[in-house]
Image (cartoon, rainbow, N blue to C red; front, side, top):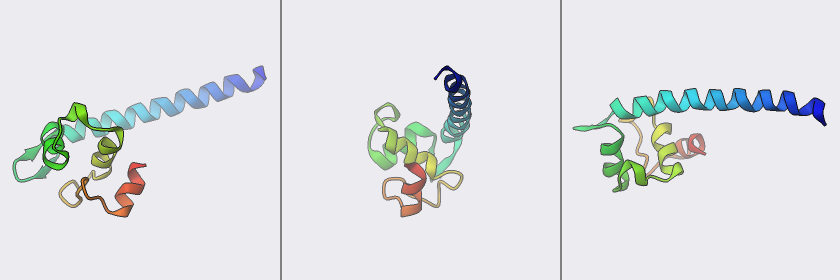
Length: 89
């Protein structure tokens, strides 16, 4: 059992590092992306698409927003197409 804990721990830590990097990249882009005429940033897009503050977004709603990147003007996270829902889950 001890032989499998260390390799699994390394895999877990690498996965967390990758997820953190992805989150930081997209969270930064969410704050500057143009989502529509005069709609910039996470707070504005949260209000526009979901009618709630960014802090009130569910994890799935946040994932839907992130899944619309890098083309936020092309997709609607409140009414996502199937491939956007697939990317978000």
